[in-house]
Image (cartoon, rainbow, N blue to C red; front, side, top):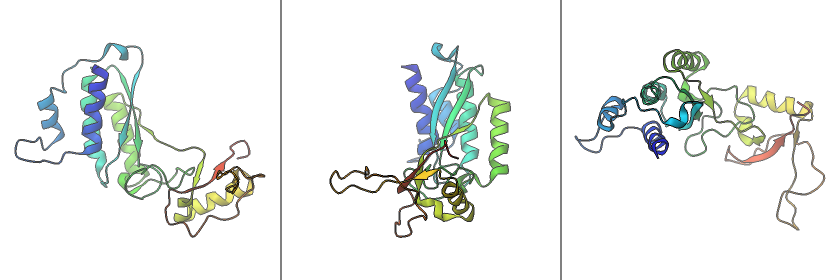
Length: 212
């Protein structure tokens, strides 16, 4: 139960944001921590021989890393500083689109930092600080095999798509009218990214890493 409480606290803290409904509502992360006694050093027993892994759903904010770092610090205190944290962050690397599934869009290419984390230098500095100060190893929610039409968004992602084609590391199956599924044989290597699909999240192929 304690693990669930901590998870709910972190999720609400880092995902929903702190939007004050009235004067009695905490307006900062520290105020929220004080109100919920989140700074007490009560690490769950099950964390003594492992790490605390949780997902952070990134808000639509170009400077969210400031509040996220504060939240990680509070979690560090909750876990009495001895338990390693591994937050899986969504929407930090990948496409810049907003809304749900903000971790998707240009996978399997993940070398692009979204506007939410500014740039690699800014993100790397954040990752180093929370590692040094809060025993935290930042990770990312990634989609390893799906190829989204969002690959068409940037020059470097279009070049990556070309590499997938050249190495025959990408394949697609068309929809079978008989089954209604994408199981039409044989699979083939698509030569271009669909241009008439507006949603960047749309999956149009898969990656075969044995060839890449």
